[in-house]
Amino acid sequence: MKQLMNSIKNSPGEKERTAVLRLEMDYELATLFEAMNTQNEEMKTKSKQRLERIRQELLRLKAL
Image (cartoon, rainbow, N blue to C red):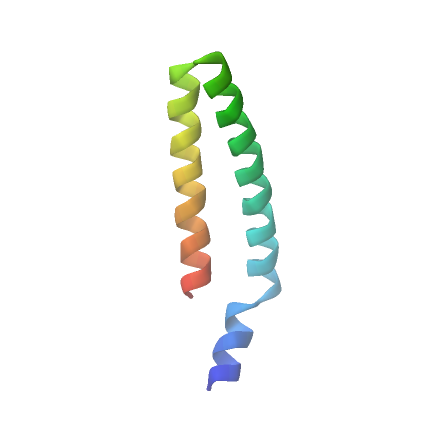
């Protein structure tokens, strides 16, 4: 049963989506860094919201 659950967890679609989410996360972290350096509060807020959405999706994918 554990092997079946692990094979379901690690489907190719999930691996691909996880990789895309990690790239999105890297981009948003760079955006947040830029916003912090320029002290752009609006940009910081939007970036943090996007990072939270990415975090939630990554948690959901790993929790399956």
